[in-house]
Length: 561
Image 1 (cartoon, rainbow, N blue to C red):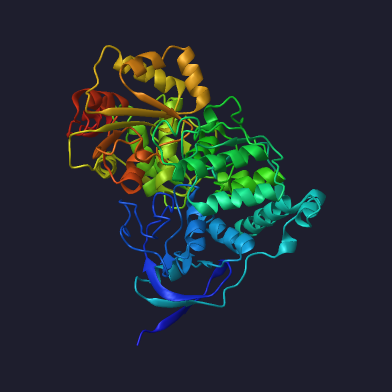
Image 2: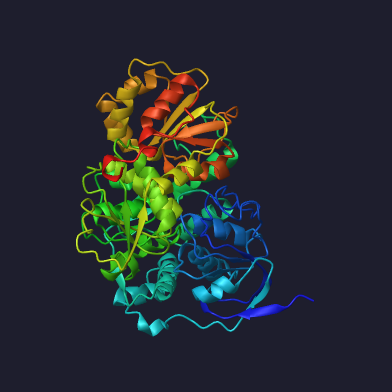
């Protein structure tokens, strides 16, 4: 007879559960990590790859990666294929938010329980446990609310602001906030169509009178809003994905449709309190710009835009921005632009739940585009909302981490082999623009393709925002790229693109994005090669990619020889 063990902890979302455990010591992004239609883990790099979470108590240290994980969990819950519960041992907000929305808005319960690390590590796959007797986070009265907050909560401003304030306040309790604060702008990641639940939530809020109180931009959506029909995208995706975007625009959002809002003229300034979703954008805003935002999950970003208020917690506070871990990096001589996404991915894997201070890059002269690539890959492999780089990012000075570890060529080579894992050298697609291409990247690519001939067997597709495309076109950068035979796609991004935009004949793609190299095998079922922008152009011309590691990754720098 199977013995059932009772597990106690802090209830992030209430509810009982009794089921067998599915356990891993590695965090999991639900977006790109779990198929919302089947509940099967599709992240090819995760230890649970191929397992089904339905009806099992999923025990992971925390979520990680994309802010859209909250929508995926909501899809699973409303579709009846969710885990019986989720157990975490680190701070977790993305999955918690999905379960909270299911409970508050749709009256469907899937408990989320936080236990101590020691308790967590006693759990094992197959063990039958019961969640019971959990104690609660802080009480309602401990969060300071303004008169307007209370009026919204009481429904005096309408049903949508009331729901939004309930959600914001629910997360504020979980995050240990002492009050709510004003934000100057919001970037909504929750415009990505994950299934019926994502559109249902937005349409319900619009019907309830939702109007946005602060300037709000929209992330890349699931289709090219203006051209999806001509691209052959089926109506089953194009219509609801466009409807979700249109619903948010009807509330007052700007149709920016970019996953790189820091490239817009509206980018926040140092110290500005904002409410951003989209994992790479959050990492970049906090770390490179010095703005202040938590990693806001999909749906919470909309609720913050409706109320104009956010929990006073996490990176909104000085103490929530402190580095606890120093990572000493060996900067290889002759490193090309692939070093930065590779390092970001590697740092994310090694920092655990702690904000890192990266040392050793003081003389690297990192560019905006290199930091963009670093931030995106970092945010893919960790749930941490920011990083510091000594001598480069604005808040690195004065950080005093208590622990130190090193990342050298050995760790970088291991990460490279994980990202550059395709067994085939033949390339069918070059994927560029994850995150969205910048004006500078268009200029660099235009120089690299000038006078060269693309192989007819290789498609080249670039994603970018509308504003960047307009500026790059005016600068003359797009003409040689289009003459080379590349396709430029706006509004959507690689984490949402599938067939037929990706040619069905493609078996192996190549990208310079650490983020997409991680997600693509699970999202589109293709093998991936990884390399620099120049290496991608070489592969586009030759039809195949070199198998050897780049020289800078195989030879010690003179300082370490």
